[in-house]
Image (cartoon, rainbow, N blue to C red; front, top):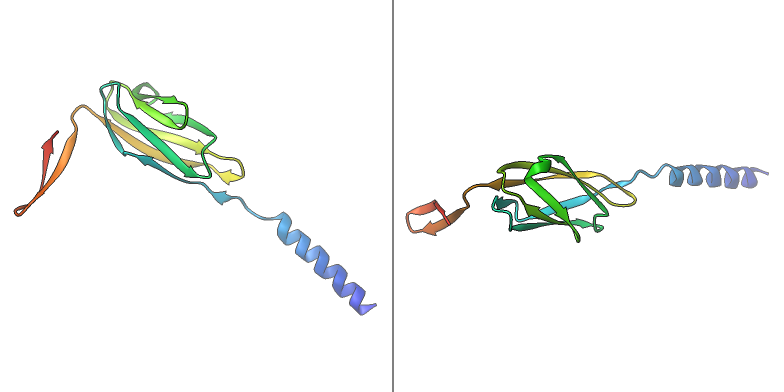
Length: 117
C-alpha cells in the first residue's frame, strides 16, 4: 500500500513539474546593426529558432520588412525597434539604426579613427 501511494505521489508530482514548463526566451540578432538610410541597404534578423513573425514596434516609416527576415532601410534616419516571435518561445526585441552618413572605424598606429565611408 505504501509503495502504491509513493508511486502515485511521484507520478502526480512529476507530471505537474512537466506541465509548468515555462517557454524559453528567443535569442535574436540583427546584422548589421546600422544601415545607411538610402533605401537600398538590407539587414537580416536571425534567431534560434528561425523567427516566424517580425513586427516594427517603433520607426515604421524608416524601414520595410521583406521575406526571409530581411529589413530594407528606408530614407528616414533614426532608431527602429522590432518585436520578433517564434513558436514555443517568448518574444524578443531587437534594435537597428539607420543613418544619413555611414561611418567606418579605421585602425592605425595612432589609434582608432572614425571616418566617413
